Length: 289
Image 1: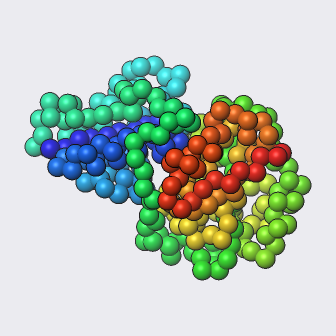
Image 2: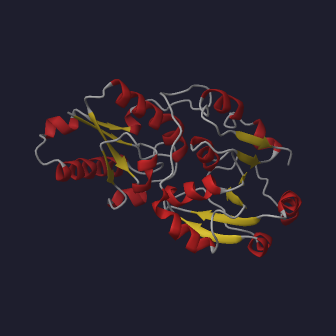
Image 3: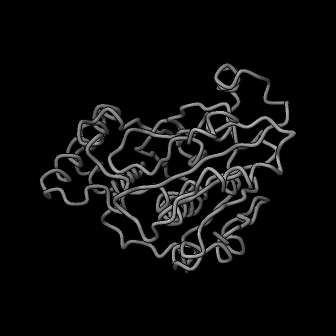
């Protein structure tokens, strides 16, 4: 028997809500084969899955937004077309299953109550492991061996969700990075091309002092923050979900944000450190800006 799980909303809800729910379902039903429908590199998030089916080539996928339910502001027909294409994709992979066998065991993230990932632990979690297959490609991008000490830098901002207008200045970056003068610096400009994706390109100063690379998948990103000596993540406008990833792989991350962002309900760092990130890595908050 198979169960099929498809998340198409904001990645933070997938990482700290949906994936924990799916993992618990899989652990409690070991005779059932778990099939994930999602982004290819998210096989790292679901290592127990029987299979991960790539949905990024479905036309509606590129129309989804990086928001809680995926199709914010779009007509319901778009969501329905997306789900119908997901069904067809499953049928192509498992032609021996009947329509009823698929539909009765197909679960979408928007049909479950939106989890409160800021106050409740949803499901169960374990430390995620990197896949070293992409290491040579990553080293080619940065231009040095990952065994050399370096700090990894990433920022994120999204104009659709701005709960605080503060943005880091060149002087802010200079003052923070002066404590890391003996390390190489790598800046990730991350985007998976979804609408309303949280990301931030490097400033002129960061371009001067960092090796700046583009990254569009978790496989490369996780290798970079797993080998780094320090992870320095910045977040603007809200507490962004890119900050969740290093602790899920057992790595600490220093997160720099404004006092306003630190005060938001969505900045539930103490809760996550105590109840979710229980396998080595934690968020260290620096919210005095």
